[in-house]
Length: 360
Ligand code: ADP
Ligand code: MG
Image (cartoon, rainbow, N blue to C red; front, side, top):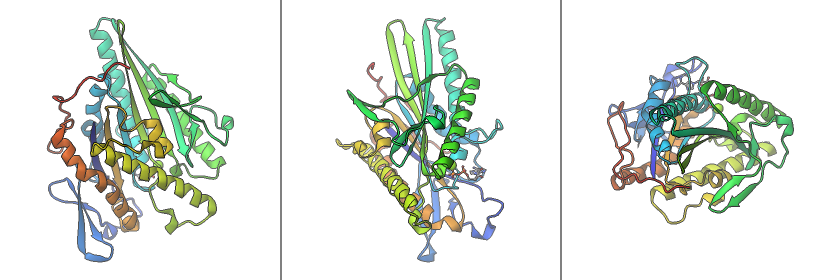
């Protein structure tokens, strides 16, 4: 099990002033510095596996943090990539990104990398090995699960039920679509994201108040050997503390459920890093479905940060969230070097301790 927590500080926006930039990364590029809100002459410093500043490109984030996980996915390991941060810090930009090739986010690049590797494996095996890729895409809003591959009018208010199926939790009735190419993926994904905003509007909710989870299931078959694994890419709900700005009843219900699921996520990541026997994944729907800590997988948490003062307290709370996991991550790396710590720009995953997951 490997957990890697990295920070990405987005560029300031046109309406944000240079003098309001308060978050910086120090010279060795693994530190984030932010003033103490109670005493601005003092800085707090947080350390990460890597820190990306406003100059980092989509390609760099993908190449350094996500691309190395693809070969593990093909070896039967699960991969989970989270974007965590308050609304407006760049989670969707990091995960989905923009329309141009350069602006494409982690998700389309991941799919592109998976298809490329699948084609190579099939070709090299002269057709003996086949690779099947299926997708699911759902959101969790107020601790209810909604299928984003279904038209919004088919939604029921209760959401989809969960069922424990032996050692795994499944979402009953969730659409799984076979997807043969990147082009097909792009069409499915665009349509699903339209579904997402349509239903959010209907529910009078912002899509930033739900977690969007894309599941990419890979089935690699050679003769009678079948290996499956799943990559999950998650654009989390905004982590901001809504009690500061909103006090409507609906917003309070949303905030309570977001806080609970993010808190559970933090506890799970911490427990996994510490190799605790008990991982509290059952305490929220998202962690149950992802079976965090159940699979011998790799997790990458991208902490998105805005550089400016208007985000000060939320930035600090994000950094503290990540700090729970980061401290322990160092120990994790020493014990079981799933991720080699490399100088920025060339991180790789090393493999001496990686065992093949038993066939499932
Ligand atoms: P979130 O999903 O966390 O609410 P967004 O991804 O929507 O945040 O980002 C907020 C705004 O900042 C958007 O206009 C987005 O295009 C811009 N943005 C975020 N990160 C970057 C980046 N690394 N480079 C350029 N623009 C960015
Ligand atoms: Mg967003």
